[in-house]
Amino acid sequence: MHAVTPDYSSGPHEQHEHAPEKKALIVDDELSNRIILKSFLKKIGYSVVQAENGAQALDLFSTEQPDMVFMDVMMPVMDGHEAVERIRDIETTRFVPIIFLTARTDESVLSHCIEVGGDDFLTKPFSHTVLKAKVLSMERISRLHEKLGNLYAQMKKDEEMAEGVFSGAVIAGNVAMNHVRTLLQPAALFSGDVLLSAYGPSGDLNILLGDFTGHGLAAAIGALPVSEAFRAMTHKGFSPQQILSGINRKLNGLLPTGMFFAVQFVSISHSLDHAIICNCGMPDVLLISGEPGHIKYRFASNNLPLGIIAENTYEETIQPIPIKRGDRILLVSDGVLEARSPTKVYFGQARLDAAIQNAALSSLCIIDEIADSLQNFCQDASQDDDISLAEIPCESEILSDWETHSQAQSRHSTRRMETEIYSGEEMEFTLKLAGARLRKTDPIPMIINQIQEMVALRNQQRHLYTILTELYINALDHGVLGLNSSLKQSEEGFARYFAEREARLGALEEGYVRIMINAQPATNGGRVVIRVEDSGPGFDFNSRLAQQSLPDTQFSGRGITLVKELCDSVEYEAPGNGVRATFSWIND
Image 1 (cartoon, rainbow, N blue to C red):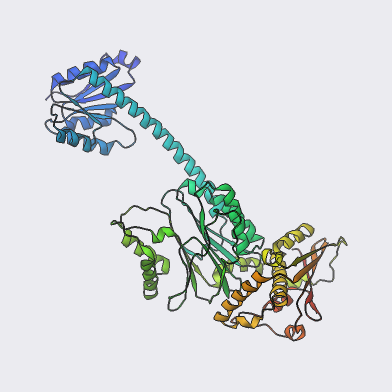
Image 2 (cartoon, rainbow, N blue to C red):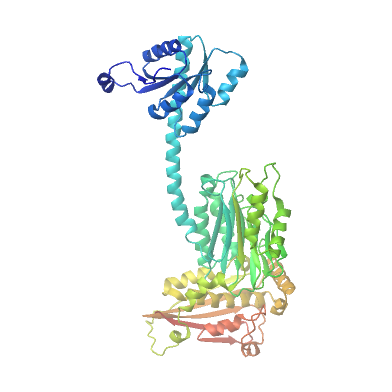
C-alpha cells in the first residue's frame, strides 16, 4: 500500500502563491482511474488530494476539507458506501457534493449510492463531457447551499433579536405568573399562542390565552398589538367585552386574509367571588373544583375568533360564574387536543378530562399530570402545533402583587386632613347615558382618564375606579334595570342574575344614568366629588346605609359598604335615585 499524501500540481512555493480556490478528494484503489480523473479536474481549476480506500478518505476529508468528493464503490479496507455514511456523520455545517465512481450500471447499485448519502454517480470509463457537466451541476448546487446557509444564519440572528423584543414587549409585562401554573411548548422558536395577564384598576385580574393561525414568527407578530391593547385597556378599567372589541378592531385592520386570533379570556374579581369567562374559537375553558377536583363547568366557544369581522360584539359572549376559593380555571389551546401520537391519533378531550381526574387521585398538579399524559401519548411524534396550558388558582395569592401594592398606600390617615390646601381651580363635567347607549358604553374608563387630566391621581386610581364603578353599576342595575341583588345569594341565583341583566340590557330603550364630576386639584393631592343620578324609583337607602360589613361568602350587597369605607362621605338623596360621594387624598 502506498503512502497517501496530498498531490498538488505545483511545488510548495508556487502552490502557496497560486493555490486554487477549489479542492477535490479522489478515492479509488485503481491508480489509473485516479490519474485520469486528476488530470481532468486540474484542467477545470481543482487541486487534488487522493486516497486508496475509504479509511484513508475519512482522514483526508477531516484534514483537507475538500469542496467535492469522487468516491469509488468497491475498495479494500473500507468500501465507498461505508465511507460516505461516515463522512455525512462528520460534515454537518456545509454541503460537500459526493459523486460515486462505479462500473456497475444496474439500478439497485446506483440507487444504493444515493441512499447512503451520495449526490450523483459517474460510470466508468469516464466521459469528460459528462464529468464536466456533473461537476458544474454540483458547483451550482453548492453555491445555492451556501446562499441558503447564509440566509438561514441571518434568519436565525433576526429571530433571536425578535425573540428578545417579543419577550420584553409581550411576556415581561405579565403579572401574577409566579402563581399560575403553565405548560408552554411552542412548535417553533416563536409560538403562535400568547399568554397575557394584567390587573385592572379595581384589582381584578385579567388573563388571556390566545392562538393565532399557524405558528412561528408570522403568527407571533400579532402578539405585539394584542398585548399593547390588552394591557392598556385593562389598566384603564375597560370591561372584558370592550377589551375584546378593541383587540378585534385592531387585528381586523392588521391581519392578512385567512389569519385570525382565537381567544380564551378570564377576568377574576378582586373579591374572588366570581369570574367572567369569554371563549372565542378555542377549546372549552374548564372550571375545576378544589375538592375533589371534578370539572364543575365547561365554557364552550360562543363567538368567532378575533380579527375576522371588523365590528363584532361580545356582550353575549361573556359568561359570569361564581367561584369559590380553591377552584381552578384551566385554559387550553387546540395544540393540546390536536397533539398526535406516532400513529396519527389525536390526544382529544377525553384524554384531557382523564388526566384532570387522575390529578385528583395523585400527588401531581393538573398541569403536571396533563404534561405526563401528553408525553406518554405523543412519545417521539413531531409536534404539529403550539401547546399551551394555564391553570389559574382562585386563591388570594394571584392577587397578592396588587394587594401588596395597595397596602403600601395610605388611605384614611392621609385622606381626611384639616391642613389640605386646594388651589381653587375646580373643574366640572357631566356625562349622561340614556336608552340603548347604556348597553353599548362603559363610561368609567373615560371618566377616570378625564379626571386624570385634571388632577394627579398617582396611586389613587384604583380607589376612584372602585367608587365610580360601584355607584354606576348600582344606578344601572338597580335603578334603571330594576334588578334585585338578593338574586345573587346562591351560585344558581348568581347566574340567573347576570342572565336577567343581559336580557334587560338588550331590551333597554328608555332610562338614563347621569354622572357629574367636580375635581379640585390640590398642591399635594386632590378631591373629587361624584354625583350619580338615575331614572329609577329609588330605594330605602337609610336602612341599607345602616348595615355593617357583610360576610365574604355573600355574593351581593358589599358595594355600598365598600364605597363608604373609601370615601370621606356618601350622601343619598331622596327617594334614593341620587347619591353624592366625596373622595379626597394627599399624595405621599
